[in-house]
Length: 200
Image 1 (cartoon, rainbow, N blue to C red):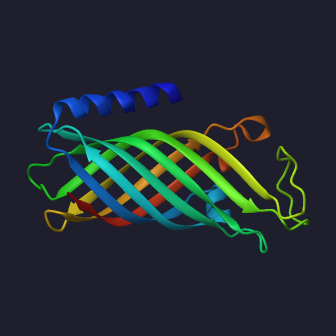
Image 2 (cartoon, rainbow, N blue to C red; image 1 turned 30 degrees about the horizontal axis):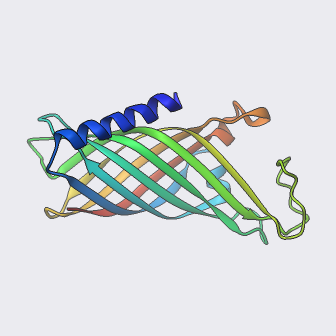
């Protein structure tokens, strides 16, 4: 599944570069808020997110875009353990064109996510489970990276020709192994994002 999504992403990019000379870029800033019953809600606070998008084609019904988002979350679950996590999200967006309300731009998205965390493991009394390699209480860091499919939906509203506000929801299912596989609490990341952006 991962290879299929990456292949479709790259194919769409090269087809778009070849067919469209009027490039349309977007850059956005948003606040990611974790929701649902999962580890992110209880262990991490969303701080900031960035969006980069490129519209590579345009039709009467839909405007497809290549997108990359990165969110940063601060770890807050245990005192004396510092660190955070990045969520990287390359994806393909389909933005619907509404002739009756052109300022309103709803969309759906599909892509792949990488969740990487780095925590200060200097506190000997904190149990990270059974990481490999084993964490020693000497200031070493706990580093882990997981990935999985993501999908979502959202809508932007143009306040001017270049400035817009936006709200979206992202759903990520991490591809876990071992004892955590099949545990929805550990597999799922759900966020609601609110932000602003510029088109140029």
